Image (cartoon, rainbow over all chains, first blue to last red):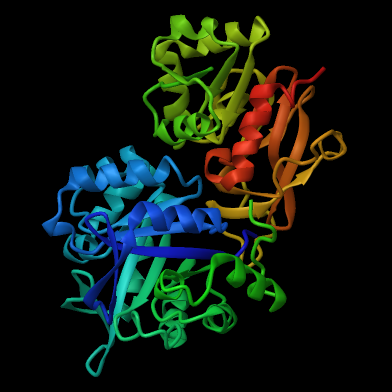
Length: 255
Length: 210
């Protein structure tokens, strides 16, 4: 069984890493190359890069960012944001992405997941869910980086995504994003119960205890941290140390 | 050194990793030039049947066999390792290059699936190195590695298993060698700094069977 993964998530606008609160009010925190390099040096298991304003930014510029990052960081890289077609995915894979993450594009055209997974394998397709709690749906899937309600219930969506070809889920909570109040473990549990593919829990990590709690409460395969790393509340090393001490099955001495 | 570009998958990440360790990398698209290189890397992601037909169409199948015969060092990575084997059950039943004896097979559904073990095996897993590597100068190059695969090599006669990993509580081949041929089921180019150490050790001849 693979180790549980400690993942750094970098939301970017152009070449700038940004971090908002509840996916709004984006603040600049630094350059993508500087941050990805730092987490690679700290021994992170995987890097997630999401272009949060994809529609406003050139595809070719995004590909160049991925080329830059993968020339310096030799760990798997998941890339998402604005993937609407197989050609968009082709460009990112060619640039060096190991997996692509798709949210809005899949909600609008579920067949897109199937097309990409037939071409690149399901392990290369990460379905991203951005959920917001809702009276009507329990949890509702949001599109466009948490800005637009989709009218699709998380419960309904997760029943479909695996058979469509998704090889992994990235589960974010619009309510918890950037709040450092901890992962929404109920949401992650609901998603994980509905699929047999690995699940990455994201949104809300404020420090090492939140990551340990997420692994314990949900048994998820990976936890993605953003603000807590960007603002220095923890490092990948300190997180790994805490996880090992807590008996979480993460890899030991980072390569 | 050369990286074989046979039109399947993304070879750029492998090139970048070798460049990062200071290697002079040629991405080779013409099979007739393979013999010019002392070190040849066969990368690959995707399906075995697509991969082998890509090698045949481009003439790299013969070129690699000839390069191996003349004693050059060949490293197959992930699907590239599997293509070096005798055959695979993926996509029907296809013959490989026959440079690394063994048969490539799926993880059988009957292989005592634990609830947490899944195929594709994708992620970081531990490596258990043979004592010939562990006890050698420098020791094991890496303790764990990044994998992404659904098939694995069942080694044949003459293939030495240098490292194993585990899935379904059973060991499978992570690194195998037959004389000047080396295969890595994991992705050294995605296995952090220690993965790069593995690549530079290979370039230095650390895994040569002497």
